[in-house]
Length: 344
Image (cartoon, rainbow, N blue to C red; front, top):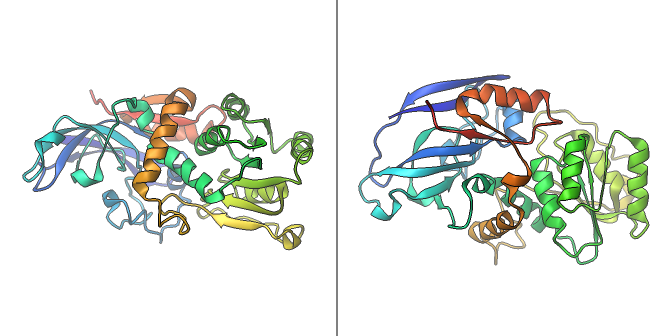
């Protein structure tokens, strides 16, 4: 079988390459991909050449096999497909099964059954593409652990920020406040349940938002920094109450940042926490597993229906270069992009 794959060939250069896929070996299956989702945070770092080249991609994902962020690289981790062939020692139950897997954008690939997640019967395929991003949102909230009646802020409401906001809005908090540069994202945040939003570039709007927060609390008890912009860290500090927590879910890659730690931060006793979905908070590991967290993510997908909320474009995989150009040049109108893997 010939497959088509998205390859980041160089900075801001995306190629579609053709490759031969061998028949599945012992303990392997062949998956024909139906659709995949672009991860707008990490994939844009790769596209822009801002991912640290010395860093392994993700040792916990078998598809990457210890690769590093060096060109050329195939990257992505949200595929839905169908098992079309199985090798020896694989149960017949896998044949024709629709599955999710953490895999780059390829129209077909080999995998081990243990690395595949069968789609629940009540989950639509386009919604299933959001499993990694919804799981990230769940992990962020588990790490930040906002308490009953607390005030929460979110700086940066791209796809992960919007999903995080949607979950927070379902919790018994006193308010969920969000900041983002782009009007479409702010409008979506309100639709998903945010209490109020503001443009971080509009000083008057930010002051009004801060005043609203401080009308019932000394500041945000927990702030989730999800902007992907190092300047977002300083905004998060300014919003957060003394002794509060800033959860940094952004990966800044190699982007330089000037962090303002010499002013209020010095005396505020803020707790700054890095959060990344590859691991679970050590305090929870006795009770929580990745599988349990994924079940929560599926539950949130059922409730929120992310494909109806934040999927802004669906393009054929052959147009992948255009997709990344759109994300790079038109972030005000581009949120999540899915690739259709039917190649004509």
